[in-house]
Length: 411
Image (cartoon, rainbow, N blue to C red):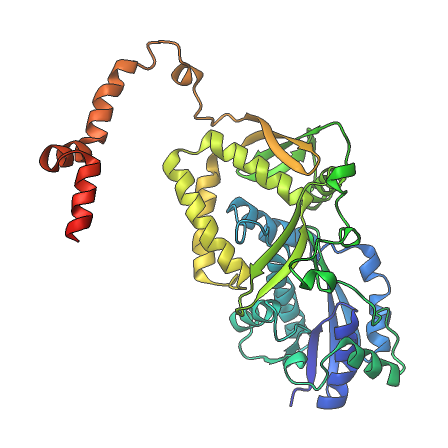
């Protein structure tokens, strides 16, 4: 039986109930850890007192904002990761750093177990426990939602009420939300029926594009080796860049996603995601890539993006594969220094200007005008060599359509 447990604590309904449940069920000391990943002061206000009041012996609030952005958000952005073409991985990226901080605290206080409040249906249990396996395989992992008898919010509210433990949660809570610097997600309520339109009251970070400003706004982002360093000419700390772009993009309704995604555990789920700053950064970085990367490098980066996105989504951050992909991405990013201007207008974000000292775009080559830089007559030989396999096939077996039809009939 564990003697001292470090719980990843949010102060919400689940973890508020887990603290007394651990003490009653396992007769152990509970140390709460609240990770500040930019979810906002309102969610963290009074969280230490709340944890102690519910039975925790200590509560540590750990500021992870800068590390979260520099070591998790920016590498994922640089790799171009978008899960299933839509989701910018906001929740997925935050789980490994929270788990890492939880393990570090457990080592400092000599805990012998770790605990999380993830349900048995979701992705987060996979992410937390995969990180625990990589960082602290010797520590026991406790997942109450997979073992206790409680099934609903009503059950947990009754449990807390009987023990006189206060909570701001109610049975009428509509949405399950997760927020950090990068994004906010919304699940549950009317969203559980995929036929329902997303309710207007679900969105929090972004304006309805229908009532967003009628005039577009341009925002310029400067990059150094693929990492954003300034907004509209003002150098800012990494976390401030995201906050600034969230504000700018949010008022134009940029970054809304309504997706039905495939969870790692096998089921489909519907979620609303708001990532205004991230959408701007991804669009700007793509604009810079178009300007500076050759075709084969772009293809490689696109292939990496698919693999990397799955690793992040599946919680396999602390793996040799992710580290190897980072090395490749960093190598490609050597030329991603420059600036891009993105135009925001009623829910859209589109690159309108790109500049870089490493630009591969040469006007003297691209122009339709004849010049010494590019002799158009040379294209004939190039085309003949490129199409040589088709020419040989046609000479041996006849025109392509006939040859293909004949081959199909024989098969």
